[in-house]
Amino acid sequence: MKKFVFPLVFGIGLSCYAVYSVLDTLIIPDSNQIIVEDKYGDKLPENENDEIITENNEYLRYYKSSALEIKIYKEIVKTKDKKNKLVDTIVFCADVRIIDVEHLLGRFASNKEGKITFGRNIYNKTSKIASDGNAVFAISGDNYAGREYGYVVRNGEAFRDSSRSKNLGDEDLVIWNDGSFEIIEETKTPLNSIMSSPKKPWQVFSFGPALVNDYKIVVENNSEVSTGIAQNYGNQRSVIGIIEPLHYFITISEGRLPDSYGQSLYEAAEFIHSKGVKVAYNLDGGGSATMWFRGEVLNRPKAENGEIEEREIGDAILFK
Image (cartoon, rainbow, N blue to C red; front, side, top):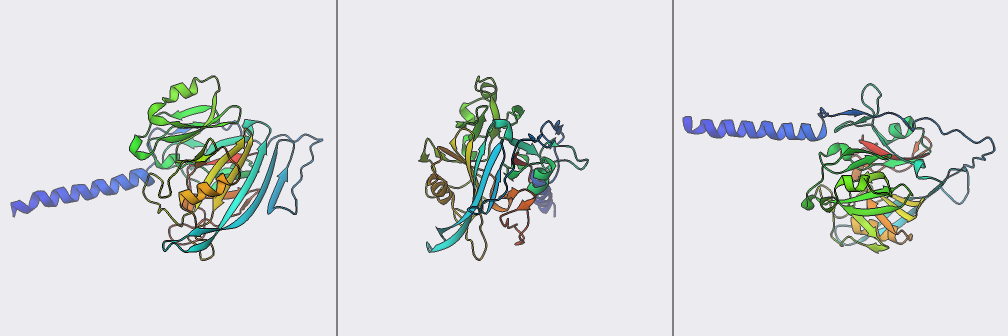
């Protein structure tokens, strides 16, 4: 009987550890939470001479003020399914121009008390984060709250400096204070060197990978996100690209739907590359991929349970 005791105890211990790991990764908030001052939550004061235009028949949605211009439309593109057959995928596109980088904001989810909180496993829907931040337009962020590692800089403030290992994928997107984009490698670039740069970082996102750099596609045809959860076909994708400083192009592709198959990373890279971007970066996709505009979710995020609904996430990117 004794010979069965150790394997039994070991098995129970291993199972408990596995359950704890899942809870720690997805559910249990960490003990190092930081309440973040809401410096940018107020509505921007409107210039009394500023004409707000919200309609343009050329676009699905349109907004123009003295601070930003947003043109949203959707395209149906051909992508390949598992059998290499061409199928339809719906891609929502947003052409965004801002007058200053402070109109591009990173915002964390709020805790149960309604306080903006940096910390793992603090989640809200994109629509809540966007509306709480009085945004005009928003997309889902980089899933920082589901990971222990990966640089986090939001609105010029550094929150996490622990880097990923190379085998987890270490490409980050730095948005500098002039609104320009740069791809850096975490394992070769300490965060303090970024923070001390005279260019001054405004945001650092660490999901990845980079899709386009210096006008060239930089992912392979079979590339996929480092988590290994997503397949290399048929996925919902969220991508942010830059045409020039303060002029951005954003895509959200629908996937896993009868009328919209989804994109591989390479297909997402090909599509946004065709729009003339200099740099493009992959954000948290799958059920997280969400495009929100003035109180309305435009795309159809599909959750793991098969329902069309927003997934709660740790952060979002806001334009206001």
